[in-house]
Figure 1 (cartoon, rainbow over the protein chains, first blue to last red):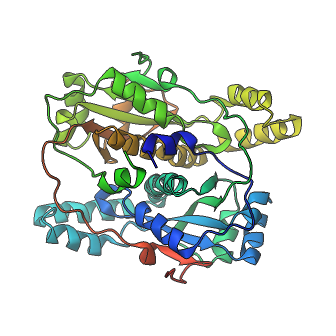
Figure 2 (cartoon, each protein chain N blue to C red):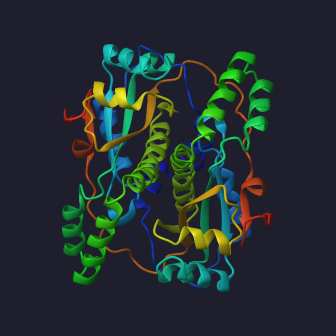
Length: 210
Length: 210
């Protein structure tokens, strides 16, 4: 599917066909695209819990303000961001040294960055929110390119989601994303601000016009 | 360009051709795709400062650990996230009521959500980091689909970037993104964790295998 069509036609969908399932093969194809998202030092903060079991989706719906599409979707993806920047650090540093992207001096700086970032949980939360959200956008677009609709949800009881789905302490629940096949024509698209309203040239406040 | 090819071929590029410029028409096309990124209640937290002037790129380089590609890129995008959820709230609520997505009861809930979120700056920072990063990923992929290379930078002196580029207090500098035409073959791609290493089935710790 053409890239621009994917972006223009992706909508946040809340009406799913309960009979059309998202398969293991589709999920594999999806995550094999998501993995190419960029992250600082390639630390790859993201992980995902795929919830397809109907009883689990019902439980999850209760933790997400009873939004019906959580129960109706074929799958719900719990998007998790690690708040531990050191998690993959040794593995990633070894990989970077192996392919020549890191020498001893860069390794020293890398270790200092990881140590410094890890010292402050608020910084770690902001770090993982940014990094993991990049992967979440790749996921929603990739799903659309495969014919699957999605809807991101950012209002939920994160503490209970973690407890009920066995998520370790050092993860942030970044988003829930419902996924499946849409059943009906989407309503009109809500207003989007265009480039002249969101882009500035050289400094803030100087509108960009072309 | 095919969606999966865009995702698979996007790399974080640090070597740019100084002679090939990113034009106004390209930037307009780019932001007209970025605007379709999703956001909770369609609040669209993102704004962008496009820095193409060579002197401004030199100033920005100094605020980004002297990373040379900031100076060499044709354009650097300062990705800004509003930390004021109320900024577009009235406008967006009116739009939603106009197209039938919001009634009086939903409007009341919306107002309460905005008020509650706005009361805590830390929540606002996490909110904008997530929402704005979704748009940043769309931007990097859209650029690739147009033949433009990018590189995200998350280490910079945010306070000075805001001061030197006239950014109001109630914005977060989410990322810098360098942009231009790559000059050489990219080095080997660093290791990515595959689906079996990042996806879990039904609950955390139960590996997903297909």
